[in-house]
Image (cartoon, rainbow, N blue to C red; front, top):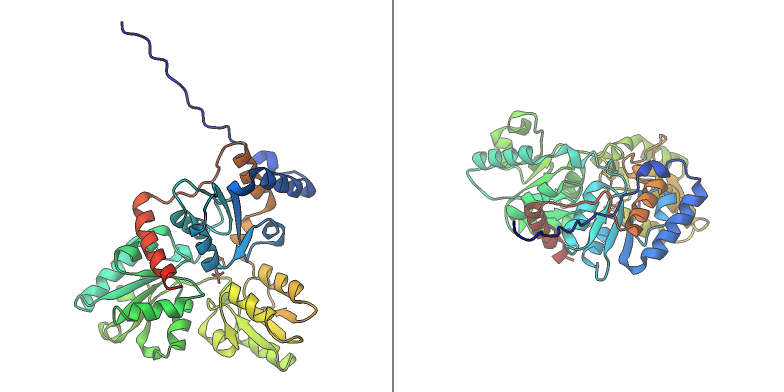
Length: 374
Ligand code: 13P
Ligand code: SF4
């Protein structure tokens, strides 16, 4: 018998179970979040999307819209851990753009985006193939809204396409039209339609592709004439805002300024004074002359925060009479944040978001094309 080989066992640090956090008093949760942040110091950055609830966003090092937060993924020099208070596609984007040795955590894996789930790789691949058949192989540039899975971003990277956000959709469509006469835009039909029509593309050249119908529900002729093919996806939160809500505010508050997110329907955007990303909405209100009255069509957590922070210089209202919060954004709560942080302190990474290598490489190509446009 040969010499015995000592096998060294490498133990993963023990994970702390979430159950331990469920019934902690609120004040203790916040105090322990602050202590964990202090302990992790410059190794940690907490990113927070503007739709996060106040109890969570107060702990974020950086707040932003999707574009600003994506840029943070690149600027991770010296950081070892990113904790993403937002939704799944945002954490994936952070993982794709950050260095390999940076861990990205989503405190609750149930924080998805229902719009992102409306487009999947097999259906988008079929759509592109059918379009190529009808168009005789003519080039079509795929554009994915950042609210999409990493595999769809990778699809765009591999097929000469690009990613866009609500801040840069027009610039991205211009980029795409420099390369091909047509674009396939997914998953949000409303951002795509609002951008295309604002660019002056005639409505008959903007068609909707319903993946459950043959040729997306279009005739071959309509597809040959189309310049923008929109995927039939939408955000349920932003569909709650209706044109009559705008009419009602204008009737009750003459001179009120209306600003909405471009995920709202065309009818709502057309009746508004301005539309823009969450960051653009905040900027527009804070930089407006003192005394300006605003009504805002986007998620309620953000609108309530703007109303509080802009008072007393500006009066800010919420456009819908019903309660519209993004229930998945709201999945991130202080106990989940604390659980993620105390695990990091203990040396364990829970809920790590890791995009598989192939998707990571190609999605990065599509994201970098977008970021290169400034
Ligand atoms: P922003 O990029 O404008 O923050 O939008 C993200 C989003 O999901 C809106 O519903
Ligand atoms: Fe997705 Fe709509 Fe929530 Fe934005 S508000 S994350 S688009 S479900």
